[in-house]
Length: 103
Image (cartoon, rainbow, N blue to C red; front, side, top):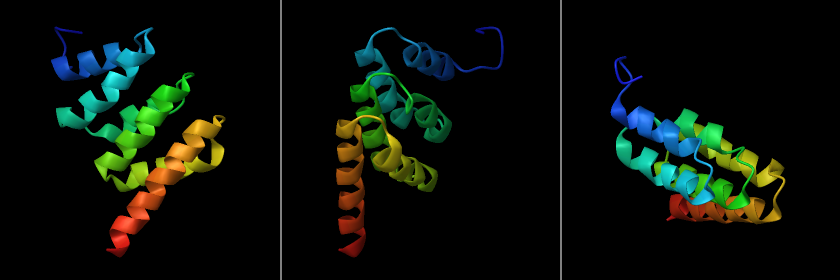
């Protein structure tokens, strides 16, 4: 990949996304938001991670990004995520977003 047109940032994000440790996958959420890469496809892919804490990090990242497509992801996580903790986190973030819009 290093000899292709794939950037070092994309290689790093892909490495973190597939990392066996959940903390590294959570780190990827922050890194993608800081990278300038479009976060939509990255966070969508990570939103089905088997570890709830990673999915909560995705919900937080979706909220922080402000991307309309990720607002839809946040709503989907609120309704359909298998973990009650993830659903509750998504609901809380959506409530904050609505409160911010009303101010």
